[in-house]
Image (cartoon, rainbow, N blue to C red; front, side):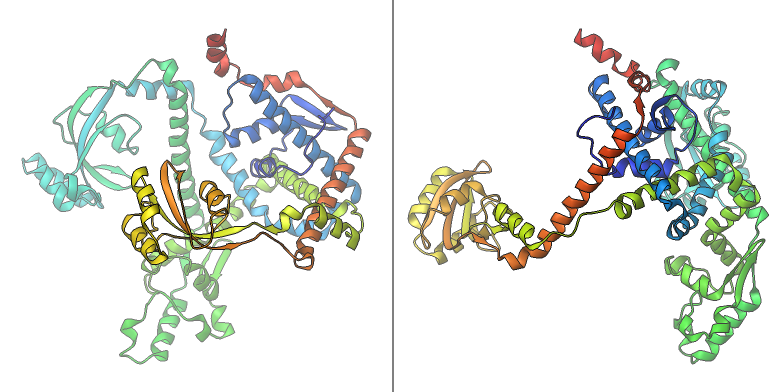
Length: 574
């Protein structure tokens, strides 16, 4: 049975983690049953993988996992109650689900084309490890086109200065500073293409142009040394696995996007662009035009038909002038292309509409029928149903009456009392004897403020002549306790605070004041209504717990913990 004292308000952490991961899959060992529904190890592990907590002992981790299972049980009870109420057929819910459909289509797309293909094989991990035997030092010259790269290669092979060419020609942002020197690096630190080439070279060798996604590289291998950071394979296997997986993911994403660009080429309607530039010329005098951007347009100057002109289209979609102007203003002005720069327009429009294009590709790929997509949509729907059930469908008692409100006020006067305050000027010093001397010598506020401006060590307080304003006890307890007993116009201290010595001049005092009932009535009603809601939900949950068959397998929860991480600690403790 679920533990007593279970918090029935849904954990935001658990709710969000489930929503993002979409853990509605049916696989995995069953940790708990709630009526006919199951909570699986996969459900729990999906959440745990995102919270990244560490625990001193396995028992502490089990306690947290057990608590999360309780939270998932509560969620499932709310979902079951929502189905009984027919919340799954509410129109508002349908709108919420459809509004998030594209997000889950993209999740399914990522799962199919990236995640499912990026898990490293043992041979890939071993190959990566083998390449870590050496670290290399290299320099490179990076240029945009193959012809320039070949020209530079021919010249440096003929003996011309490599570093000078790097300084003069390289588009690497660091080249002006380091003349192409990349320092020492190991396998995995460089982009594909470059990496394969440089690790096949010998010191002193200069490579022919090598292409990567950044451009064309001419590489000079400067040095090759044993990698003293490489340890045995078992210790490095997991970090290498993650690094290989990341590199595979990045390569797969790049490859997939290139395929999408090829399948959905963006065609810019040059006639629409020319029309906008012509209209711009008609709207402004010639002497003003050069000062106006050629990459933006005041859409207020366009009529309805002009706003609906198509500026670009692709297979399955199009973009109007108004939509483009709205989207492009999210970009900084210096990267918005001019209306006659058609190639750059096509690139920017593809990036702006990429989510829509990817969603279209997912639909054409049939991913709306994919199990990953359907599982995530179902869980997202059910979590929203649980939220609606909790917030809107559990009956609440009548609003608090005047007597309840007044009783709360009388029983919680501390909440509605402004604490006593005392206005002080202060001099804070490290030297106790100096503080005592000043406390005796200073006779007026004017003299006190002058010394505070010269001497106080409280950060930022010299410019204010030592004025601390009206202080409360919870701000400066040592000063307050003595200041409240000190007469107005008198100097108190020194008292020890922050390992220094404080003397102060009392300016004024304000006694504690209870706030008027009418002034706090509204927040009291909100507090009581919140309590009523929590109590009603708790009562509802307690009743469901009694009427629902719930079985929790604590051994199965223990089995979700990787016990080897605690083995060393346990051994040391024995």
